[in-house]
Image 1: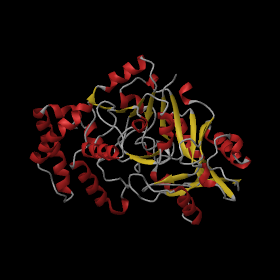
Image 2 (image 1 turned 60 degrees about the horizontal axis):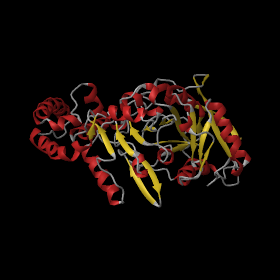
Image 3 (image 1 turned 180 degrees about the horizontal axis):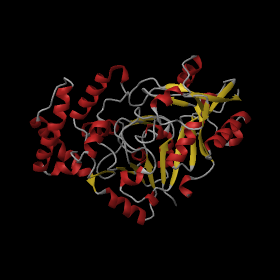
Length: 429
């Protein structure tokens, strides 16, 4: 049986939580391989709603969860999340949650710098969550990050804090923000060490052993391809690589271990925060989609911007992300619309493109080229087979397949886990 990697193909918030939960019930290990607590998955299980930002979704199903080295980890946020889900009756501890010993840590100075930068940008703000994700990745690349394993060596930790504070306090002072003292930071990290170190492990070894034993591994991506730091709508992106190829580096496995790549897409398009959005609907139709879809960011609580399905963008994400099968979510939100539109390309300077250009100015200037389809009046909500779908809804899905050049292998028709139509078993390879 194959492993499976799940990534988003739009700007995140595609409903990955439900899909990952559905897949996790059939996996043995679920691995987070990038991002931080700026991403969120909402899972509804047995009437209980779990909002997860760092914890792998498989923990809700009693599976082993792994936080890979490609994640940036806020210790306080992790411990708070563990406490919250434990209060909901979920069993989480070192016996079922393992964290890469080389994972970089987010310290209080990281969100402080994040917020100071955003404030300085004014009207040109990128729209970060202010949680320190970007500055933490910067420290990782600059080789000054404090990693989980460092908590076991007080002398190493002290020396690394000296270097970290020289850099960050200089920047914070330049922004007119409050600087940090070493002693309280060091003391807090040493207090956290005995709470965090029991989770630490060379997870690359754990995953190698799991593969050798024939266990199924689900690689759980955060954000989405169009937020990838290389391939997304730069600079309005996240600070990590969100494509499936990064699952290997971010978990410590070879590329052959990734298995089948599933790309998640809503049957329409949403985005949280700033940045270009060619199919955005700033009208009553867009607001109605938002109301029906309950479109609020899981982490930020901000209303999501809503628009028509952008097939040109998803096709681009399919090619870049190595997507072999598409999972289409929230089809039921479109029930009752008399007509629907699908973006097939962009008009820019008199030409029509089938891709989003790399330039921010060109992305902002691109105008959608639409294909209009008839909607459907019957409900798709709760459908669990093709036969239960209105004929026009089937045509809509089939047209999306043609335009994005990838088959739809799973179709979600409500927030309920079992309201899913499966055309192909992802774990069958």
